[in-house]
View 1 (spheres, helix red, strand yellow):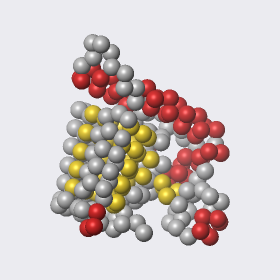
View 2: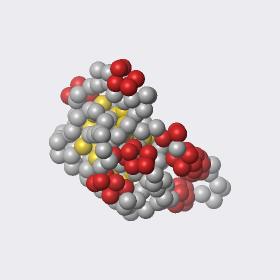
View 3: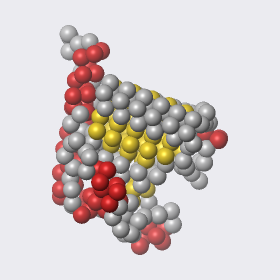
View 4: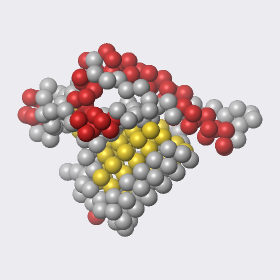
Length: 215
């Protein structure tokens, strides 16, 4: 359920972003979990387009003749440091990679993000240290009201809830992390799992059948 007022704690979190943030009333509503409509605010539209341009550069998989794996990684991560709200040391993000806003993503040290990962960061996404994220994982903060009448009353707008992936987690290939979830330190989520509720710290490998699957 969407909130009815701005979340000052969440706003303070995003104020720690090390890249430009498109601050405006609608953006604060969005990161706070209120209903929002980003497409109607020119400042937010311009920010999204700027992110799309930068992501095109990040996802450029051309390989110069003198390239090494290290040089290709360095080229990508130089771009990434201008995209993400915080990026720790010794990070590798493989292309293709997708994000929505960038400034709402906070990543710790020694994190590896494999190919095809998508992060829909309408609300903050916090990733701890030494996290492994497998291919084609979807981390999605955005959602809608479940009941059709509620969606009509909200005039088609969406809302978002933050996601936390604590340190030392391993997220298997094609797992989906849904809004508002916290994955506790050291937990492992199996490939293909759909995570709709919090995962306890240190949880063993969780198979799709052991998790709450969205119906």
